Length: 566
Image (tube, rainbow, N blue to C red; front, side, top):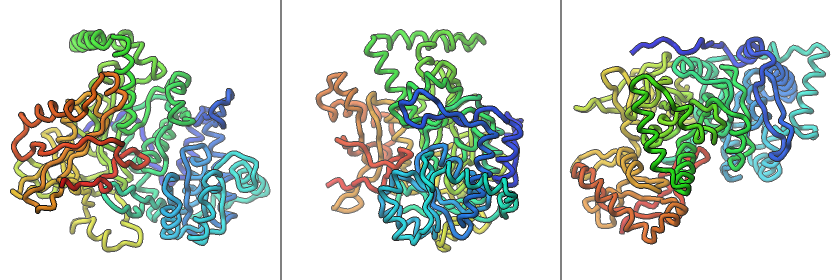
């Protein structure tokens, strides 16, 4: 289904052209605001023109430091220094490997060595705690800081050094060679189902991806950045998406400050993973339960929904108290990275906050399909973006099969892994996502499940865990996380069972005076089993005492779960 673009989107040749054009288009508008220390009264602001000048000067200094003599490891949480370093490196044609600062020193050291990085740019606290081991293992000599301190290797000194060189006629930034179709970004996947790989992405892949994404999604003029930037969802969709449209982005000082920051900054839109949405929803419902207003809100939602069917939208007035918790201006949440509970999506839609979800994968930079601003409907992931071709491989009688993708946004391959690269593409050049899905009659894509998570029973039947997980998540109040898998029996495959492992919100259990979580969940499991087809019934369920292992995007790391059942 072809639809007109929602935004006038620009397809840039490279990052340097993008940075320069954004400065021309947005000028003195604020690009970033932040506090140097969380409790500072003063908020620092950076205009688009200042950002561009900082990138030019930093890029000049980085060239003098030799960043094009090898790859650069960029490690840190979201900060102005991280953004400036990322843009400067790509604007001079360097190869950047953004890494998760929460990885162990052993994981970081080995990855930096494997990625053949010659320069380390990181936050000062990471340099102090892990830098020596990383440099020793990887043989790194050049270490620079993203912090705004007074050290010689910190961002302000580097920018000043580049500025002085430019004043003396240095034009190395403008003349630096950029090959937009060569590897620019080396992203190491988080490995939720096993060991991650190094994904090679070009500048063309990244820039075309956000160009096509913004044809489908329209956002406002203010946001708050909360996602880690080393993931492509955080860097492409959040970082670049907001820059493209000229949004003023406040960089959060941390999750514990977020609610206060939203009231202060009043974002019009947020880019989040489902975990944040679920956390917001639980807090709202807990507050309503404590004040005994939960049923009253439910009645108001029903009245509002009925009014909307006649063309009358009262949500801004009726749900001002809920909306004020997010600053009062929030109308859009772009959500990705994991499946979303439709009940939560419907709630936010009912109070006037549209949740837009999509489908992506690191190997595709990351966006493949997205819904438009009419919201998420019936679990769909949206329309494929304009630069991609999506096919369903070997569809069954329901039209379901593996989702395969082709386009300029698809990776070049896996770093130093030709066998994995060859296995990732079919004979026609389509990337095999490993995800199962289907199209509806209007061309909207639906995700059925993950190939690696697929349960193939001894009778040959296929069970998609995600389908059961979403069903349970919508049924069980107080359920924080659920993972469904094939439980492994020591007695042989014929004794394996479909297992649902549940982690419940301790605060909810205490408030509702639920003393036996297992008995509490049993009724919901039995209710699900009554309506499920025989091969999708849950044979065994477990209650976890602690949270599932997760990565920094808060995705559950499934391969770390003990799946034995006897």
